[in-house]
Image 1 (cartoon, rainbow, N blue to C red):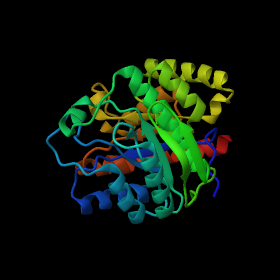
Image 2 (image 1 turned 90 degrees about the horizontal axis):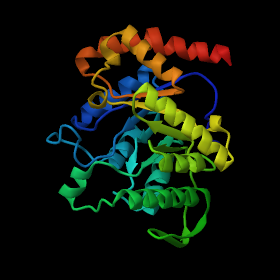
Image 3 (image 1 turned 135 degrees about the vertical axis):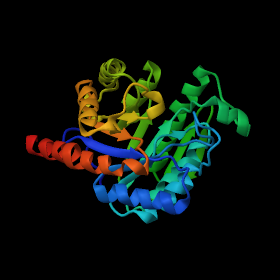
Image 4 (image 1 turned 120 degrees about the vertical axis):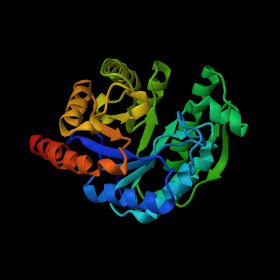
Length: 298
């Protein structure tokens, strides 16, 4: 199975749910979002939930494995895996397993890690920024190399592979699409070299500036900028002045502002069950028409 192209086409819309509800409710919600027609469904990767730390939270990758079996069409992923939690070789094995479980629907997300409190609580090292980025750079190369080859060698400062045999091969060839979360210049250089999708969060002005920086980084890496899908994540706690789920108009306005800043994919943490009706209206009145318009415009 070949991976889908990242450039061109209609806008894409996905949902990121936090794995705090009881398991039957998590499954119910994912199946509902799939039935509504969202393109992708995601989980965050945390051991303790930021901003509201005293709520239950399942582990992301084991939850995703269950969701691979509970869904049948939608693309699925972790947005994004914290590199500080797992050796990249182990992550690659987890990824190829879920790629098979899902029938080739995995989107592989990876980030450097950021939430210091959960590292302190669980006794995990959290390096200084320079080392954090260096570890991430090596980890992305390790994951990319393992997923592309049957046998891999790598000798880095932080990670190493010595004749690492990697089988089975992914369902998606040459590997599942790689999503990298990044905001700053050094991280964007890594995105430009390896990513199929870049995901970020910020104001329209910040996003526009990062888009321009990524374009330049792609040029230095010898890649077409359009080969990297530009993706925005909406988390309510980080957008205190925006509530795109307030109404159809609010959702359309939010998407329009970030579309102008260069984003083509929009991933949202959803509202509660009491606002299901507005979600259905937004799908019918904004998402479906924008998708049809994008296809017609190709």
